[in-house]
Length: 628
Image (cartoon, rainbow, N blue to C red; front, side, top):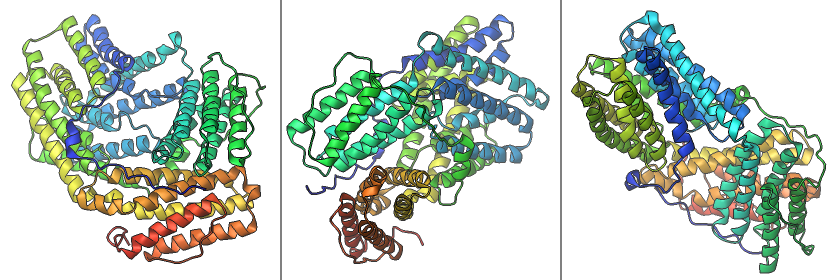
């Protein structure tokens, strides 16, 4: 049995990364679709002799931006909900425009709800900002509460057009999203297999879990093909087997043989021609189990086995949202923080008499999406610099006084450019967002000079960004670092509960979900803590060994669901003893001694976790880390 080598901790985030240009493919399909969704309502309005209402309908085009990797059924439901929500934001903004205090409170509530719903359901792109944007823009239109429902209707029509455009790709592509995400899962399993025995294994393990979680949402929601459901379940089984395999010694020939088998599965999923490679049955139990799982996956992918009905139990969106409401859930706290400072930004902007006060909370909402202190400052820098350059571009465009088809073409091209460059850096996106917003607002608010809009846009954006930075520095800095010990302790508790459930066959699936969520959140909280400022980062980094050992031990425990009948009473008692000692150490923040057990991989991993905590608490590095 080879020793477990802790990988190097991920690198910290730097403020210099704000201007780093990412290497990413240009999303042409998304960009063209969003450009059409934006300019078509304006074109229709122009042809009908009512271009102003065409611009109102264009606001509903933000619906198109919420497409993602999903089935068409999921997309239809999600985009319909987005279009209706944007419509509600327009109606509320128009009705509440005369009431400064109430509109500021409602802006915060909209931000809070949008942030919580989208983050809890893992719909992170493009985020909650557009709901706040529509509401705030409605408050900046000419006061006319009686037109609220009319404006809302036009936004809904624009959203409906975006819905049709987003769903239209089914007519010519009929892309099977379930199959594509399944192929992605098996390719990620290949990357994990190739990393066995290297320091990169634990990062690949984490990425594989995230890939399988994305596949859960898509494949389980479709419930169309039993063979696909079974192939996805086999992918999860293979993941757990690879987790166990990391502690096994693999010869080069055996490693190559396993990779050939997995390649054959991927080829079969992609409908490529190829035969199942011959292999020699391994005498290692874990390796042999992997060989059998890969062969089953190949048979399913190549349609060599008959499809059998599989019952799948999934949680509704309402259930997920309801279960997520907890004071221990950092997403809830982040949503409250997000909504609170949108409200404060709106109140300040109206109280101080800004020319276009709604741009201040919009800028604040866009910047506060950053997951930590450093990323928030990144977005503030990117939004401010991009807006300054973009307003100059917008001023030049408006000075040319485009109208008719030229105006429609400008709007479509600007939106297309936004979606093309946002994958590279948010600065570039804002260079096109700013002129796009200027053109939209100036057209819907005729009678003001170009300099009026340009000056107001720059000043309000900078002020909104500064409010967001101050909010994070004063109230949010280091929050993820402080939550790490809480999440770590909760993860160990969930490991205890799952072990009892596995041993007693009692509500096992419920505890599997709880532990998996804790393991993912533990790593996510650590990754977010890397963007806290230096003192918090240093405090978080001392927990890295404990976090990595906890993650690996958790996945080893999850693998027991396949061989739970082989867990003896003695082994069960020993593991519970180890988990109890670790939990005591986390609770008291003191080193606790207990007997080491070496029979199972999980026991060895828990020994490593215990040693990491012993060293941590003896050095007193954790004193400032864990809140009372």
